[in-house]
Image 1 (cartoon, protein in one colour):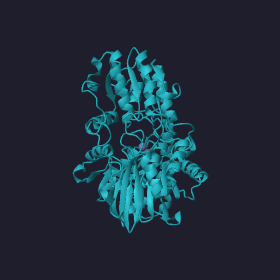
Image 2 (cartoon, helix red, strand yellow; image 1 turned 120 degrees about the vertical axis):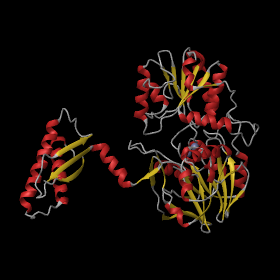
Image 3 (cartoon, helix red, strand yellow; image 1 turned 45 degrees about the vertical axis):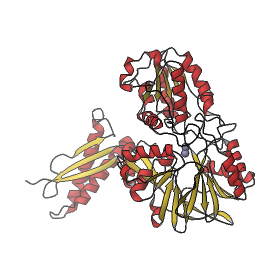
Image 4 (cartoon, rainbow, N blue to C red; image 1 turned 30 degrees about the vertical axis):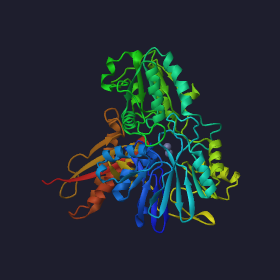
Amino acid sequence: MNCLAIEQRGEVLVVDCGVTFDDRRLGVDVVHPDFTALERYRIAGLFVTHGHEDHIGAIPYFLRRFDAPVYGPRYALGLVRERAADHEILDHVDMREVTPRQRVKVGSFEVEPVRVTHSIADATALAIRTDAGLVVHTGDFKFDAAPPDGEEFDVARFEELARDGVSLLLSDSTNVDAQGPTGSEQAVAGALEPIVAAARQAVVVALFASNVHRLRIVGDIARRHGRKLVMLGRSVATHARVARAVNRATGEHAGAPYLEWPTDLVWPVDRAGELPRSAFLGVATGTQGEEAAALARLARAEHPALELAPGDVVVLSSRVIPGNESAVLRVMSELLRRGVELRSWWSDRAVHVSGHAHREEQRRMIELVRPRAFVPVHGTLHHLWRHAALARELGVAQVCVLENGDVGELDVAGVRKIARAHAGRVHVFAHRALAPTVLHERAGLACRGTAHVVVQLDDRGRLAGEVVLVTRGVVDEATDAHVLAHARSEATTALEELADGGGHGGAIDEAAVVAAASQAVRRAFARVLGFKPVTTTTVLRVRR
Ligand SMILES: [Zn+2]
Ligand SMILES: [Zn+2]
């Protein structure tokens, strides 16, 4: 959920505007940054470094609040266009394409994208000229010596920037704990090809849909081995479509689309059944074990395009993002039960390389830029601290760790933390923000279920008829009827006591009735089950 605001003279340049996801299964579609803190400034523009969701996904939400131009590399803007169309705001978005080494004025800032390599095409760092000197933001990067699209890391430009003098470097911290070289995307081709070559039946490669380099590699392999690509999952289809529709702005292949696939390479998913198994090369989403994604559906034999069988090969060309291990292992178990040959990073290290610089490459970046001050970005606090320590080790004079919401100030003396800004997360469901109270209630409902009590009272405040109790997600109402009966009788007793002790001469205190019924039911459940469901009570007035 990357989003950085750089402010000078009362105006703000926003760098990246991404989303994240909520893994608590509370029906949250997406999480975006809370933009409240930006409201007191004039927004000069939003600049994106590359097209990954954690850098562009929140742009539609941002543009609902702020009227600002969006700058970025062509491929990223192609993806922003897709998002904007989904949100029906495409007509209102002012998108301005920029190419590496092109300097653009954004308010009082001057911004220049610099080519870097990463697990998506058209990734850039940003060189930002500010009142406090030159700021370099790496975006997400790794040093890939042989990028599959031929767009090489512009080391020479970083050297020139270093010679000009860099006041502040902000750099990607994700893989600070990883030793050894990151590895080239091209090496993945070398690992995937023999697997496909040896396969006699269907092959499915699961990958991060946004990795255009990997899509290109899989497409090349399909061509060489007489297979057709079948796009399994919406996001691989979207990314493949954008990559075939957007023409490259720079490099040797300028003018040609990012993916130059012949029209007959991609086989329509709805006709997958007509394809011989030996010609099937599926590209699937769902490498993180997401239940609704193509890979999990294939594993459960619920995907209409293919029923996996012994002899088929499934390759997880991916890494497991920490926190997703059990979901991924669950999907892997299902795949193994289908009898498929399963290849993954665990069995075949080379089927995946990361898009983020390992420690040695982070070191190389700091040595390349030689900044006066350093702020690590993109990682948990642990990653930021480790990356900060690395910068100190390398002799950077000023190192400052900033967490979400921290305000750092850069001047001639360096950078330091000076304040806190309002920062937080906005949880979105069905295109609407969920209030924190709603999210809290959902958590309660998911964990403890709900009980609803209906109390009928006559006009003297006496119980008229039986107390009704309905539960969801609490007990099996058929087999545990006695638990419900117990709770109902506790509620009845509490209400009778309330009526007896009331002496209110006809005036019924409904709030007291609601409280007594709810409390009695919650206590009854707590005694028998050990937990209290989310309980609501309705009072019905019965006239005779
Ligand atoms: Zn990225
Ligand atoms: Zn990222």
